[in-house]
Image 1: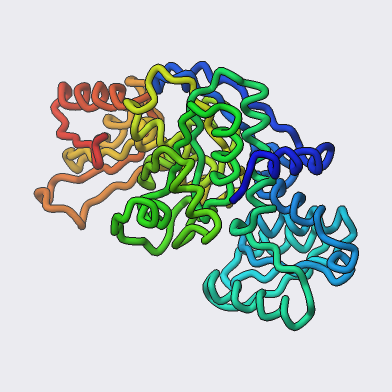
Image 2: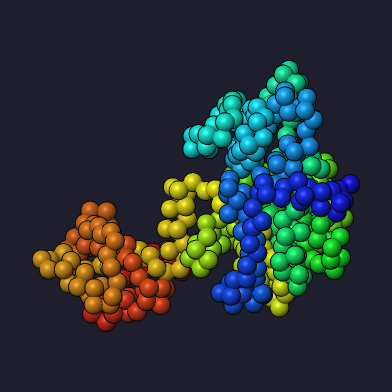
Length: 402
């Protein structure tokens, strides 16, 4: 089983090869959650993910013969880029097998690091099977994304850095997919500070580790915003470590993750992908379990599709009441629309979208529904606007009131 010495040796190998990312206090998040919150900013790595720690440690231990033959990995995201980047830096041939559905931007970025990309299969399992078959055929070293002690040791180096920079931490909150990251983190943290609490986080749609450790039977979903930890079950080498060294496992919903991404962007001005934001999502979902504690959150990565990010920001604006859709019923006469929009302006709201609905309504033929999407300050501002419209004799309702 993985030991502290493995992680300390990995740290020596990684010196000068990966970034010793900052672990900084967030005063605002501390006020929001009631805990003293510190953020380990792994999204600042060159490939914007912790994954390159494990990849670099694994590649650094290959023999000359293994380096000459090359390596192969299966990944649709961060692991692929970590392996490709460090293989290129070390002069090792790298083959990356990705499912056919992998977004083109990830394929291009992996190829940009000099890797040979093969698109195969419609699932991660199919891509993994093909990668292992190619490894046998071509004599390539297979670099597993999590179920390898060299990978786990590399990932665990971030815990050494966290406790060196913030020795008073008494709780670490870590994302779990296959379990490689939390296995390394828990091993290092428990060895250095036995009383520290290590908490793992998964999304409710992919509760594989929770089911494996606790014996629960939570159903698995088809997709999650935290695709970086969308793994059906923890690795065989990781599972015993999860059972022995991880104190608690928590589940978060998709909305929690979306909220965490938006908060990190607005408050900390830092970009986290879904998997990178689940640690904060756990604090938002289960605040009573962390109040009064000194909590280190691992922001594991920041690779997120811009279109998905735009959608998350928009939904976050709706959730906070800064974007509201209201419907106003009015007489269908000249000047009616101008009157409504003038009242909206007087209340300090801005019209983003507007639709004048005559046919698709149950109102009397002489009436019209005016549907507007408004930019507002918050939910209370929307309620003030509705009250003002009502005072002017206009019926108005807030669709999806928060």
